[in-house]
Length: 390
Image 1 (spheres, rainbow, N blue to C red):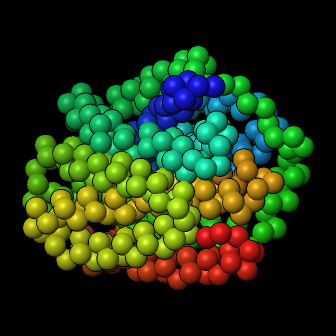
Image 2: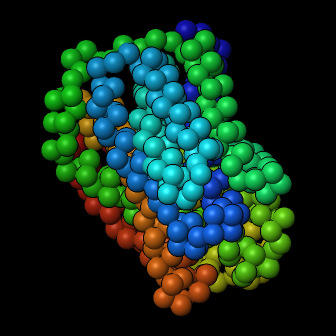
């Protein structure tokens, strides 16, 4: 492939990440509308975030194993079909319970798609630039927070929250066409098998990496899940300003993802360690100054940058821990990311229900990031013992 062909193929795969980013994060910006329309509590509204995340946690390793021996392009298209069906179900859901099922089903192909897309991109560009190629795939998710999520939040506020699901289904259909036309076929690695992938589970470094990702990302979701409430009730923004607040966070995520991709090609775990420290610091500052609008926006942007630095680095680290089981290892990044999503939503909700206020989730996230620093140091130790570059 020429460089131009590779670029278009990777961008096509990233479009799927964009659709996934819209469905994962727009639900948070539209949570107030859903809660009021379906007459459920804030806690139940939070379950729509957790249900999607649980679907990712369950579906990522299971569907990754199913795809271990399959041609990667065809498998990516299959996963997009599942994604579309689940979103159509969510669009027509007659009640909260059906919507909850739709959210769970929507999450099932998430991790396996990202794993397949990341491996396809990394193989196209070679080992020297894999961090940047993975960052481009993951950037679809981050860019969704700059453009897709604010736009869909605005549309949902004007015309109804259900339109979010139909828009995402259309984006996934567009991705199918782009991937079918632009991406190359890629056979599974020689000797790939379900048993071979499962043998990778007996690996301490892999499980430490998974724990690191869960803890490291949970703080970001503790803030993001309740961002609309903080922005309106603590900072004093109007509901109409929420798309712009989300856009600022998303801009930080985009910049952070590309910075993380560049840094990952220099040092994988070094990037993780520095990002964890930054997350802890910025979350404490966010909680302390959330009542000052301009300070809140600057610190929210910084939380987005530092949290997204972790994405390409954690994805690459997990692949490195299990080179003979890349599909499964890559999928675990997204299981961990969404376990963190569920954990962060629950962690934030618990601190609020304890009467600690809407700033409390950010303080809880800072504690989680500090624990992530400790785990990152241990992961570095294990990597050095294995004789590998950190």
